[in-house]
Length: 427
Image (cartoon, rainbow, N blue to C red; front, side):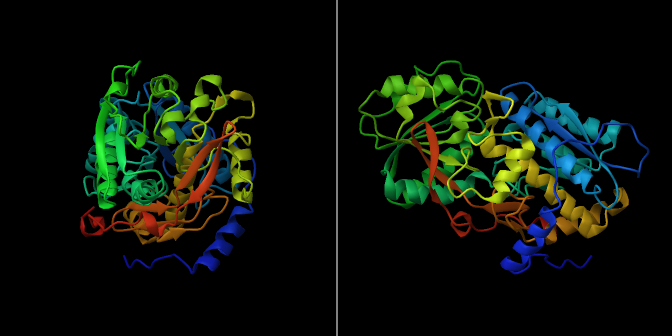
């Protein structure tokens, strides 16, 4: 198949996607009715309904539900309704593989999307390739772009940790300090942070003064925190799981008033209310955000549309319950991934497995997406060789119990040399 890149000049792309976005309506989802092969497009959704990723999984599912209702209200994909079949993977690698197999053998889905936690994705991706199952990650792991997966795997929306840190490392070193203590979860996602931040800091003449890996299932963190050296200038933290509130609370209690600068990935506060007394020590600290949780003064019409569709207010909490805080910095990846799948299927005229390879080649031919209702986080550059997306990153500062964006990186700052060319692999 001849692959012609579809990225138009940026202004033209913005106009064309905005026009399509104007058709979008209210949230919902097409029902899970059993249908005969060929009369619907079925997408398998392995969500983290339980386990350490449960808060993410719950919001990933809500976001997918909203996006698919919109897609179906627009007429589906190539005239076919789209059905989502969700299964709980337990945030567990073994269960993740089992769910992939179930989607292939029992449900015979057209594609799978939705995995976030990198250790689950790392186990599931090889099996997806063996089953020749199109597998769209909504994760941030670098394994895909590092060449560890296969041609059936894509990450078309959310950026990977290596690109995030490429953009963040320079800012941290030049703005906050060069003696950095790393605190991260003890599994693949955390190792991506450790390795890439070490490289970024050392490239700027800085030094990693502490390397603290913590099991993601840990309930208390007081025994780890004394390992932070007294001469630390910046604490860099990223933590996940049900005990994130305990982590940031105990970190504040340990440091007291005389603390170094603190830069965290918002993973440490995803799903957590920020304006709580026990988190007051975070005032004046910094966070990376993939998509700003709090609506900013320059909020786009696309962000307004997206918030309304998924049922989230200007603080990132559920409209139905202000205490139900969304995983806003990550869940956009599900929304945007579904629209990326839709685009690839439309380019290839996909209506069933006979067009599978054409659909995958169409995805590889896409070179970007413009900021729009479909891609509310911002413009994207997609690398068809590495199957990885690149986008803007946000530095936010805690101010008055809110996260206020103080810096937005360019997409180019997140680029790094290609490490694989999946287009040279066979299907």
